[in-house]
Length: 238
Image 1 (tube, rainbow, N blue to C red):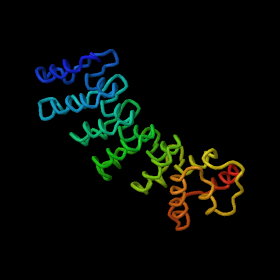
Image 2 (cartoon, one colour; image 1 turned 90 degrees about the horizontal axis):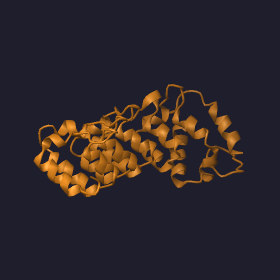
Image 3 (cartoon, rainbow, N blue to C red; image 1 turned 30 degrees about the horizontal axis):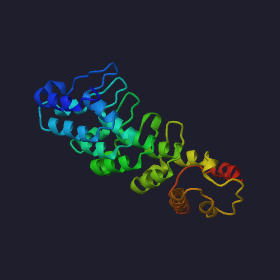
């Protein structure tokens, strides 16, 4: 089927029952496969054919054996064009959870797919996305972006969802705790004299911006809870 997408398009046009048909052992639909193969043009055509037809909404929500919808796959691959094609038809798809309790928005953050993440944020809107930005164990999109060292995305997340700076997971860890555990994000052998110096020693420009926001919030008492982790952070910097 992979090399015969025109036939698939014809089948979708003539047999609406094919929309939700799971045709592989991993329970993928034709749309899952098209997304996985990066067939942007055919993904757009398949979604366009289904749009407005009976059963189309359910077909876009079909999950494979990992609980992933086609949008989950597009988000994990970072294909912003396909994310727009699918989520643009139904923004609620951004909040569908897979077997690991991950939404497409969350998966984009896990894999550091900034453009796909931002497109889904635009489609869904901040208020709705706030229902979709946590995974299992209370991890947020900011936790996983920092864990993956996707600092440019982490900066964008802080700009969009400032409250996540204070968010804790089930272990009581904030994203800042994760940041403190990553001395590799800073220049080795740095001797720091004051919090403002952290900005100078950042390897990544976006991380400098992230720290600027974090330090501003610290200075204004906007970050709550114990700051004992800062001592350990400073030790790792030296």
